[in-house]
Amino acid sequence: MKIIDATRVCAFLVLALATAAAPADDWQLSALMRSLAENRSGKATFVEKKYMQILDQPIIATGELSFVAPDRLEKRTVTPKPETLILDGDVLTIERPGKATRTVSLQEHPEVAGFIESIRGTLAGNLSALKTFYDVTLTGSADNWQLTLKPRQNRLRSVFDHIAISGSQAEVRSVELEQRDGDHSEMAITRSRIAR
Image 1 (tube, rainbow, N blue to C red):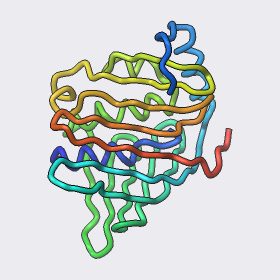
Image 2 (cartoon, one colour; image 1 turned 60 degrees about the vertical axis):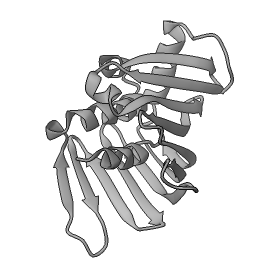
Image 3 (tube, rainbow, N blue to C red; image 1 turned 90 degrees about the vertical axis):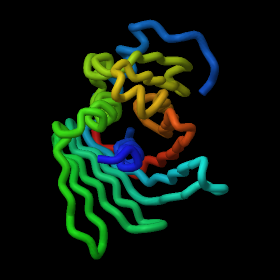
């Protein structure tokens, strides 16, 4: 899978899944993870902006996201081009109108699997899974928090510098990905419905 595909995976995995503050202690991080783990499913809309050094303007995509715990994530892009990405367990399915459906095993792409664990671990409230792949820092307050995930493994570090996931209480509101090559993406998430 190409790095650009990893960026696309990054954007969709970010579902349901700040202020400057001193780093939170482990108790606060554990409390946030417990709160996130209570979200068993959810739906949201997204607006994603991808900034690439070779382009003067960002690429803007819109669509819908859905999550069903513990490991089903779906991103349906409506504009600018329709596309559906479905992660079910460790299998990623890519559907595009007029093209053959493509299925990818995450076991064959450990760098993508590591990235996916950043989102899945956050949405599932699984701190131990996050710490397997990332140095995790929490700043802010319960009403305005930011998780910063810095990759620990060389393969992930070669692709991106960090992921910043922001939210309020048990709601993820934005995800930012800063790539090593200077490109980055920002996704704003608006919850449609959360079932607990």
